[in-house]
Length: 401
Image (tube, rainbow, N blue to C red; front, side):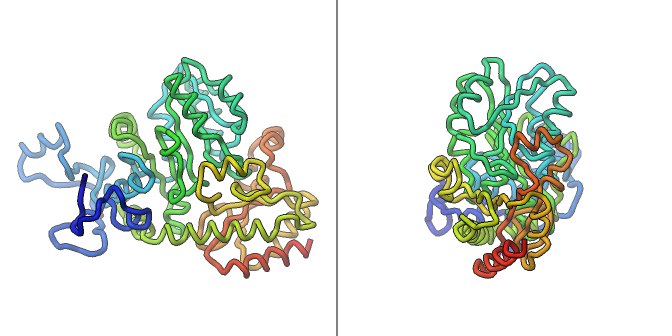
């Protein structure tokens, strides 16, 4: 078991310690803050050394930034440790991570079973891109265990899902899905954006691959796009690294460095934001101008017990259903003062989104209806402001409808 300089077992580190120290590499200068290596290539002491490095990379050896970089590697190691996996590959965006993981692991003739409730770009990857290249796609109601049982076949190659769906916050019984998939020899790939890297339970439930949009909670301050694929060393440094390094989706070192700095506060931020999200759900539950308040671990959520069994919290996002549809919803949004109307979530600033007209606008109406993306649906991302101020802002805006 690896020991630190203080004698504390690294395997027993808490989340805060992991998010600050895991994967740290120091140069000969002994810097306190992680070094940023803004270089696209690396030099070799001899032609023989170059040949040897291209034949097989040693520990902490690099040849080209598209293949790997010391700063990016620090970030990958820290995230893998935080998420509970052996290894990780950092990507240019969350969707680069999703598309990279799926494309690296699939080929024509393969069968994929996926939950139907997905982010619009994920649906596009499955139904438009992969299907066009000969991958068979089966979509199911992710909340229905029997639907997973019926759809996953002995020839199923891969199962894909969002642990908590965006934007309706449906919760999947991840242990059940992983069990059924693995009995049929299929890999499980989980988009874990809503669960947050701090409260991720994908690894604990048996998911083979976890995909994270680091744009969200990791950066958390509206600056950088990023993504990450985490899993076993065999998968990450095998088919996923091979695809990503040749297709050019690797994260740049400056993004990795800013992400490393953000990881030092991620636990503090996400803990507070999750607490605020629950407080908002409690305050708004039963409001006269709302037909529903959805937060996974709140008692009003239909899958509350499952959510509580899988995770410590319901994350930093909740959904509201405003009475009166789109017209009333827009009045509510436009009356808000502290909340920012935008299409991101998990930012330090509180954000509201109207999915039906923004993030999921291009979905056909029948798909919106099936997924529950109505004109009255609002996705609300809790920031770091005082919870009492946010609640007062929401209540005043609801009163203005």
